[in-house]
Image (cartoon, rainbow, N blue to C red):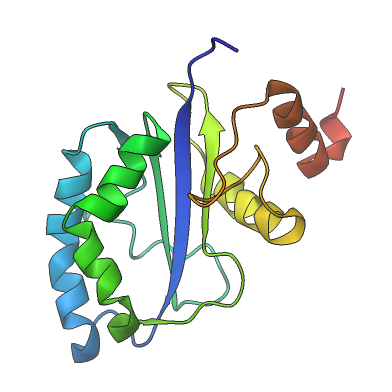
Length: 166
């Protein structure tokens, strides 16, 4: 397959206290720096954000304590470099200060065509798919990276929306 793909990623976390609580102050104070770091990282394409420049106030789940992050990168390698080899890793090391252990899948990666922007709904569907079916080309983690599979992508769309399956 010679077609070029980008990767989308979604991650969710359950905060231990409201964002305006003093307990969350250090985390909230780091958001602008970490988001700017992502925006300027090699391979970065796009991230979900509000007018404030972050996605911390987007709440697509019934649980208001779940923070939602969605972005697109040119490759898995670029995403991995940002997550593990930049100041972002400092946030990950401290995550137990601000976030509860999450039951279920909290991170998923999937292939997207360049120029396409995943929706919040699609990202939620990818997490749910990963939780229900395990890793595949439809949703995976850094642990098992799958190659793009166009036929599987069509089956995934049909699974999510059987009324429009061809």
